[in-house]
Image (cartoon, rainbow over all chains, first blue to last red; front, top):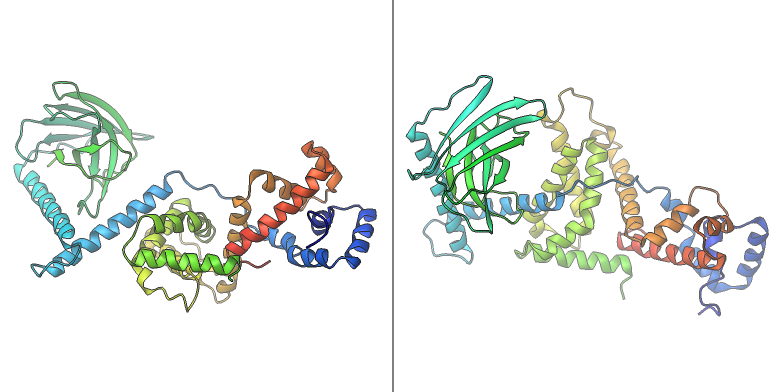
Length: 241
Length: 189
C-alpha cells in the first residue's frame, strides 16, 4: 500500500497532461522513488487515448425499451401458438395450455374478422374524405361512424359512437386503423387515439394520427386496459367492414 | 478470482442462460439496460437512420431471445454474440428494398472486406461512450474538462470553483471509475 491516501496528488493530472512543466518535473522525481505510483500510472495511462475513441453521445428515442419488449413478447406469443399448432391434441407440455388459449383467441379473432366482412356494411369513399361505418361484430346495439380526411400533419378522424358497453376507470376505448393480416399475436395496426364515453355509451371524438390509409384501410374500436402498453389486447367492440 | 471483465462476462452468460431457460423478464431487461444504448448507437452509425436503428434494436432482442439456447460461453462472450447478431440485422436492414428510396452504395462498414475491423472499432467506441456515461455526473464533468482541451489543473479548479486539492482527488477517482467501467465492458485500456 502506498503511504498516501491516494497515489501522489498529481498522478491524475500527469496522466491527463494537465500539469505545469514544474509540476511534471516534481512528479517524475517522485515516480522514480515510488513503485506504487508507477503501478498506478501503468494502470491508468492508457485511459486518455481510449477516451478519444468514444463515439459522440446519442439520445435514445423515448419508449424504445417498451417497444423492444413488446416485439419480444409478440415473437414469443407467435412461437407459442406455432408450438401449440404442432403439438395438436398431444399430451400437453408445460405451457401448452397457455399456447392453446392464445390459439383460441386467434381463431376467435379470425371469426370476428370474417363475420365483420359478412355483414357487408358499405365503406364510402375514397374522396375528399373517407367514411367508416362501424358496427358491433357480435351484432349488438353499439354502432359508430367516422369521417377521416387528410391534412398536412396526417389524418383527422371525427368519430361518433353510440351504445358502447360501459367501461370501468381502468379501461379506455381505443380507435385503430387496421391493416391486412392483423391478429392478436401479429398485430398490424396503428392507434388513432383513446377516448372515454358518457353514461349512455356515446361520444363524439376528434383525433389526429399519421396512419397511412393505404396500409391500414380498416377501422376498429377496442376496449383496452389503461396501462400505457401500446398493443391491442382487449375485445373488439366495433369494426368497419 | 475473476477481474471485472471476467466477472461481467460470467454474469452475462448467466443472464443469457436464464433467458434460454424461458425467463424473458428480468434477465432480458438487464441485458437491454446494458446493451440497448450501444445497439442503438451501432444502428445509427451503420444505417444512418433513427427508424432503422430502432428496428435493429428490437430485432436484436427478438433474435437474442430466440437464439439464447445456442449461446456457448466457451466460444465467446455474450457481447460478441449479441453484436454478431446485430451486424447480421444491419446487413438485412440495409438490403431491404424499402429501406431507402434512392439506393446509395452500402457503406464499407457493412458490406466491405475491411468492414470487420471498422465495426470492431465502432463497437469499442460505443463501449467507451457507454462507460463514460455510466460515471457520476461529477466524474464525467471533470474528465470532460481535462480531456482534449489542454487545460492545466489549476485552471480547471477555477472553472469549477473548487479547491485545487478537491479537483486532483476527483480526477483520480474519475480515472479509477472509468477504468473499472471500461473493464466491465470488456475493454482493458
